[in-house]
Image (cartoon, rainbow, N blue to C red):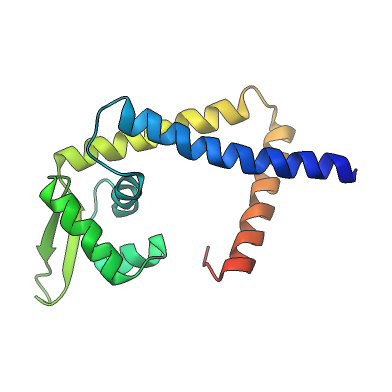
Length: 150
């Protein structure tokens, strides 16, 4: 059993690294985009059809406001994000995606859909429940050990 756990641990690390590399190839390299994966994940955090406060995005990405500000500045310059002042309180800045940003969001979502489809293949309902529980266990471990909120 210990050997099986060791192999699963090794495979988990390898899969994680390969997912990140594959995501980069799928989204950035194949499409010739001028975006980093951090910028793509910022676009994903903003969401397709909503305006979010900078603090909400920073919290979701677990980064500082300073780091996010630099990222948003770059995405605005590249034409993927727009800033909006709140009508209620002009001190509050919200950001949303431009048409180009929404296209990147959709491509990123497609990658994740394909990833999940590849993972689940033709699993039956019981197997899907097992995978779901395993991922919940992993999420709980990550949250418990990184002070990250679900």
